[in-house]
Length: 315
Image 1 (spheres, rainbow, N blue to C red):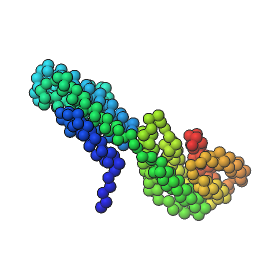
Image 2: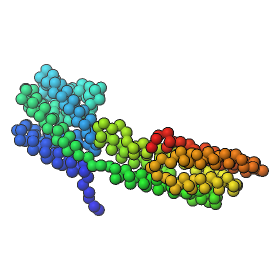
Image 3: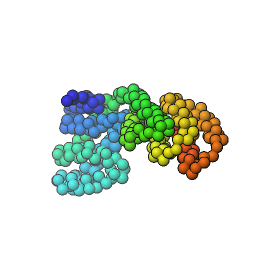
Image 4: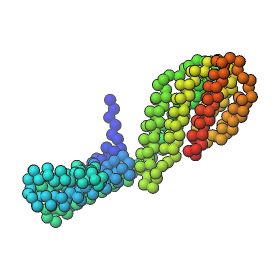
């Protein structure tokens, strides 16, 4: 079994070494504790790392006056530590910095172990906080581009969409069902993973709130919902009417244009012509054929919705 060191692990190792070295050179007490702060602040995106750092810094800054009030005001005893946390933790929750509880508890325990809250002790703890957080933010400046991975997901999803559409075409032409129930589930799982990666890419850009890939995968997710509904209704279409072949030809052409480019308007125009021709066809002679024609018409409506989703999101 191969063991692979991830980038976050590598950056954590570098940041920990850096924070301990700086804290030790500054002759800070409890210098190894800066590593704890660093480990907790190294995240898998720039924004997440910055949010984590801010939460921990605020929580630690609150921990110092709390420690002074409780330890100097009451006593340096284990019971007081518990009492302090009973008040301190709810405050961090209210201020939405409870992510920093573990880090700030380390600061509280440092002050408890020294049994005094002097400026020297306070500056020591502030130094540990700044060095620990600073080292984490420094290594998190570098975040590799995710474009290559996102492009690979995009290509795989497009390939899967094409395959499903071809299976629909084959069913319309032969009445043979060749798709499996797990196909949609697998593609949906792939889209969700891709969306998570796209969101992570946004988190690595401070001025970015959305990007091309997140929009793209959101489109595919909505389109997949339509395809899933379409497949459920497709097996109800039985008689081999002429309209089946016409719609099959349209979907086959559409399957050849599954890509990131926007050919939506072109296919919407073709679909409009198809629907007009569809209306001109003679009425079916049997009730079964009539139902099938109605279901085929609904299929064209679903395909129209499929195309409009991409058009509305302008990707």
